[in-house]
Image (cartoon, rainbow, N blue to C red; front, side, top):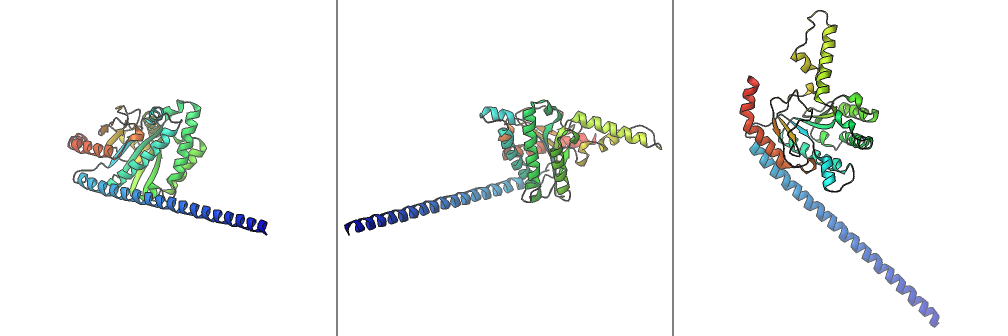
Length: 301
């Protein structure tokens, strides 16, 4: 009898212990969920305040002329990785996040054309491991562009891939073709992604195609003009840039848009590409507005 009571008492004690443990876990889960929800609400509040602040600043900037076309040279991803002791490729992934933010700011401001220098032909000279890592990242991000919730669909952006696309691996090239086809009906803005691109290659290709066109046209003089070359440029799908932004404080164009950049503002903030932010875009627009009168006069000459 005493043994039975002892066993029953121990069993009840175990049951109570398990019930208390379950209640404790449930309480901890509820607390964690509440903290997550509170963090999301705080994030949404900050995002809302940020959007409101940008709208106010954009409304002030819009009193003057807004650039129609901004191009970016995304310099400093590798240096950012080295400075912060990150693994290879981490700087480029962080840089992609910066790119998405800058695209969002540009389209909010009403800038219709944005061009980015994503991968130069010269970059193929880097180590095979680094090139492959970059190609994998580019393919991953290209495929992300055509998802329904992506920024290009959110803002109605048509995507072009500019450059000697034959130099790309088949998976990357096919991904680029799918993205261009998927966004072909978007008309509110344009994103040109220069990949496997240099200006010298673009100009050479345009001259060759112009010569071939003239050679085949027996009814006209076999002379080519500037208009012929410009019509065959990779960048013929966009107007010339108004502003080129190159991060890391460099003022070199690095074989980017040499033909098209003769009459634009070059803005070179000292920050590396992953560190670029909203204030740098605002400063670039202000620089353009400050020099707009001179640039417009030069175009007329």
